[in-house]
Image 1 (cartoon, rainbow, N blue to C red):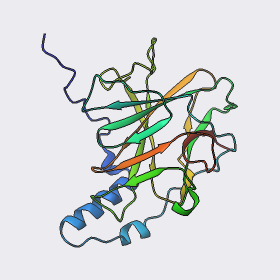
Image 2 (image 1 turned 180 degrees about the vertical axis):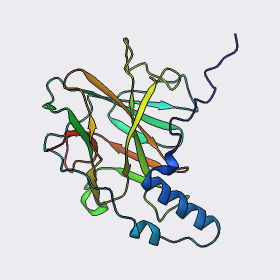
Image 3 (image 1 turned 120 degrees about the horizontal axis):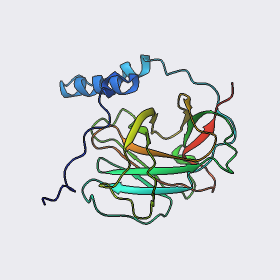
Image 4 (image 1 turned 90 degrees about the horizontal axis):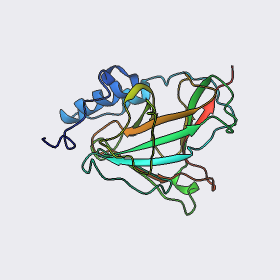
Length: 221
């Protein structure tokens, strides 16, 4: 039987060119390729309106890494988030005991300014379009009956459900995504992925100050 583990998975993000933030980024890239790069489109584009996030944002209980170049490799669970063209992060949340008691959730993101990082590492790179913040795509995943993130690989990654939002990765950025429905009990699994070629985002997810990264939170009505 032929080995299918190295075959590329179909794109999870058909139609992303219609997402406002990504549409702007694609327009800027097209202008740059023509030798007329500019940031005015990004500056003039209004940011999406979101409702305020609650103060009970929680970290993922487990973070796993998968890599398309090594589709059968699994990596240690060390709280390290690495996003590149080849690397994605799977985040598992369990609403039991987390204080997430609302059916409306969002992702809160914080990327401190360089001067505020202290001794923490935060890598953000977007060499193909250096004047534009790289975007992180957040996708919900189906949870199989048997899920072991210690052994998860690119080839065995769960089936995607829907694109929930995009997060701009830039120093000094913080905010929330638009709200989505979330279960009040049971686990939730999400995937973080770079949206553009050359993107690299790297950090450790922990509770030490300053807080940084992406967390799940409830939304105030």
